[in-house]
Structures are given as C-alpha cells and as structure tokens.
Amino acid sequence: MSTIKQKRAEIRDKIHLAAMREFSRNGLEGTSTQAIAQAAGITKAQLHYYITSKEELYQQVLGDICAQWSEIFFLSAEVPDDPKTVISDYVRRKIRHSIDHPEVARLFSREIARGGPELGPHWGPLRESVDEAMSVIRGWVSSGKVPALDPLIFLMNLWAVTQHYAEYETQVRRLMEAPSENRLDEERIVTEATALFLGRCGLLDGHSGGSAG
Image (cartoon, rainbow, N blue to C red; front, side):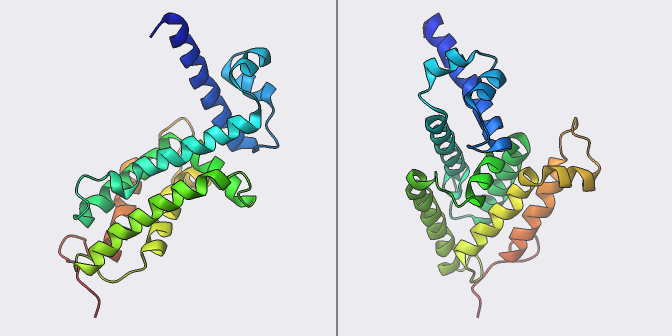
C-alpha cells in the first residue's frame, strides 16, 4: 500500500472510531459532523472529503456492528457439535467485546430504543445469523446434548447478560467498586455468566445434558 493510501486508510479508521463514540453518546440526531471531525482530530472540510453525510456514516457504522456480532456468533465456533465449548467461548468473546468496545453495544441499543428506524438494511443479515445459531441449538436438543429449550429466548438471554457490561457500565463499576481507569474484572464476570448458561443446558461439571422428558 502506498503512503498516501495508507494515510487515507488511517484517517478513515479514525473517522469510524470517532463516529462510533459520538453516535453511541449522542445518537444520530444529537451528533454533528463537526463533533465527529473534532473527535477524529481532523477538520470538518477533511471529514467531508471522506463522507457524504453523517447519515451515510451512521449506516456504515451500523453495518460494521452487525458484521462484528456475526463474527462472534455461534457459527464462528470450530466445534459446533460441542455445546459446552461453543457456549463457553461465545460468552467469553462477547463479554470481552463488551468490556473492550462498550460503545458498540450502546450505539446499537440506542438505535433499538428509538424503534430502529435506521436498521432496515441490516435486519436481513442479522436474521440469517440468528436463524443459523438457532439451528445449531436445535441440533443440540434433538441429539440429546442439551435439554429442551427455546433457542431464540436462550440467545436473547445470552445477549442481555453479555451486553449488560457495556450498556450499564457505570452501574457495574459502581457496584463492583471498579474505577473507570481500571479494566473490569473479566474473569469474574465470565466465570459467573458461563456457569449460568451451562447450568441451563445441564453442562456444568458433574452434570450432563439430555433431552427433557
């Protein structure tokens, strides 16, 4: 990559990160291109060299969020027939992502809270990921690896727990007495969350899965 192309790629990355932060804090309506440019360390004129509008940039950011979450989904597991490994790995990846990139979950939640008017182009790919993940879970149930459960509700509960540490970070830090300059205790969180979902599936040490009667 030439120096010029590399420089432009770096600026695009800065714009993307700045937009993610600003949109997660203030939403689409409350964010200005001036604020994004300032957060990215460039001028407003420079910003408009790379984007057409903040609405277009918002769509790009939403698309990137959906792509990120699809990559962390169940189907990224190399052993989909081993529910204990898949669930444990998923919980760890998702919580680590929430701790390292809280603005991602916050932006998505903010968009959902206002009815998701900008999510139209993204529901299709998201639905496909959810359907594929549910298919994996149904396979576990039908083969007796886990007891009967509702795949969709199980997934939504997974999202709720693992994203909590991003969406409610301030509350989490207050209750865990963790100052903002310190990283949240990932191991403590992962241990309890993993036990919660493995327990639902009868997969904790000393227990086995199996179909419900």
